[in-house]
Image (cartoon, helix red, strand yellow):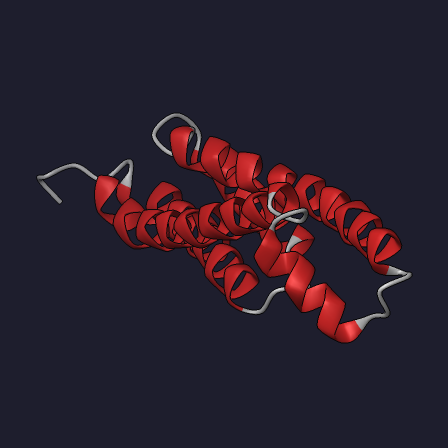
Length: 136
């Protein structure tokens, strides 16, 4: 039974790593918005009079993005942790997290593929392999 969990678990771990890197980079950009590198970038693209408004607009745009990405990250982590206990619940968590991250391209492919593989393989295991004995 544990053989069909390996590939979906690897896909989920890869997407969790990508999501963690995305969250860390957005948090770093949020807290570094008043730093010199971001201020120089904003000064090149906006006028000097509107620089404080651009900094606040950047922070106001990044805060909802952190919240939007944090919820699928938690679903992905819970799906990995619940993989041994309940396979269908994990698969549903992976699919929902993938659907919530549709604005990215790689993460939904990984998570929806992992969830679908878990559902199909678990259904096949229940129907054909679970109740077979070694004497058949």
